[in-house]
Length: 258
Ligand code: BT5
Image (cartoon, rainbow, N blue to C red; front, side, top):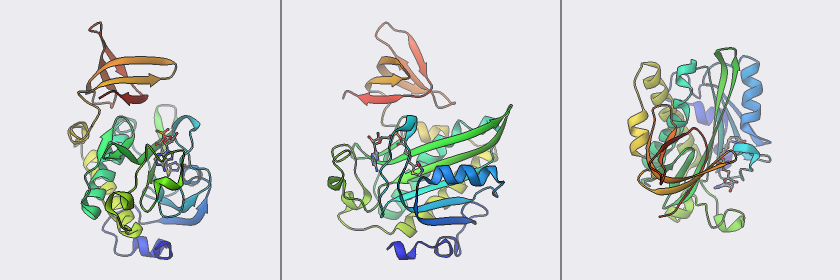
């Protein structure tokens, strides 16, 4: 299946204007985000995509490891948005993943605040957005997306109880190429909607599995506990604590109780 993963196969008749019109493919790479950042610094055209057949040093948030063996999607998209659009990129990425999983496999995925996509409560995708600022302007943003496509979670004890893959859910292999191409189309649709002043906040909020649940959130060194009441338009989680106060949490890890 990986034999089909050439830049030409990905870009051929791809129905996008700029996302994925330039693809840089490596069969093996440390991290697509790292290479995408270098490409962006060197002035890569907007929409350039870096894809790896497998990553040897895939990154999660806060230096966590992202397992990225062959058969998975590991890609990074280079964008040059204005600063007001930055908080929406996490919404854009997770919605694009949910939409493309649905379109290609029929599976219904949900979003766990802030950056996980789950199927049946298990993580099928992780998203890492990195950006560089020059004063008040965005120098570049890189959206890194890792999807477990044809992975057998039981082969990876570190994640076997918390992760799933599309093949695991479907009981059969899924076309990597088909999913990548659809993902690029969905990313562009959502990005164009954002550029046109549209909002993708409502669709993202409505897809969140976290809301309405009692949660424990680790954010930096602080632990918050309470009811995940809502999310703000900038993507922050609004948590109703037991004393009635409302905490606005910009980034964190959620543990759900129910
Ligand atoms: C993430 O971090 O979920 C962001 C992952 C982003 C990966 C993409 S792949 C393309 C691009 N290039 C990169 O180098 N990175 C991006 P976080 O929320 O910190 O979650 C990390 C945690 O997820 C780990 O500590 C594990 O517990 C778990 N994990 C690791 N690999 C996994 C996998 N393949 N499937 C499910 N869970 C995994």
